[in-house]
Image (cartoon, rainbow, N blue to C red; front, side, top):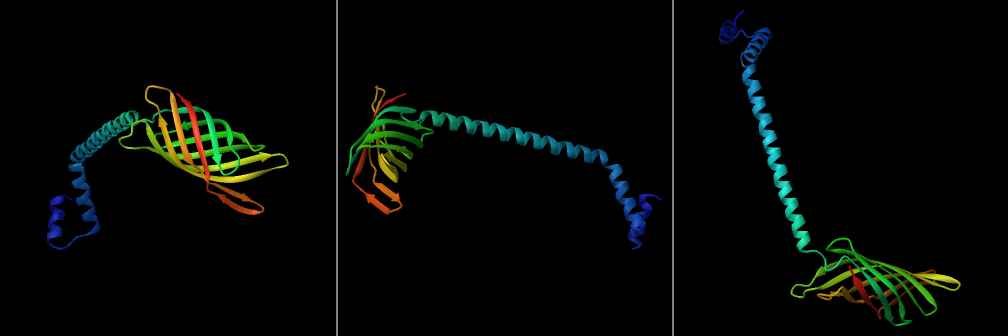
Length: 203
């Protein structure tokens, strides 16, 4: 039976499931080439959109890389002398500061003084001060372990300070306020009058 006859049945309100199935099948067979064309157009559009998207993402990544290079930290790594002073004993020893990115740095120290050895590690957030070339401010903190004859003590050391890289010379100077919080079996104690100095060769 032709599609026309089934359409006549539909017009006479004599629709059946068989007639409806035939009409749909006949329409699909006659238009299958058109459907394939439409599908191909959709696929090509998707490929075009993905190509444009990757091009845009590549441009963004290149711009970010360029921006990161322009706004790079004043130096990557600094090695030198660290001094921890104030209330209590003055501590002196080697110090290293390494930048993971423009905003993040880690600082490690092994200091000696007051018949003790202090091993300290600080994670720091740092940022440039507008209008002051080579000068950064930083904020951070970390643990400090004191070793002495017969025992050890544990401290938490928050800090905030300034780091200056000399223009034209591989040298940096840092100064910070670093109060010390003692945590132990006998309770806790807070010492606000502690400061730090760093003299480092940079590369």
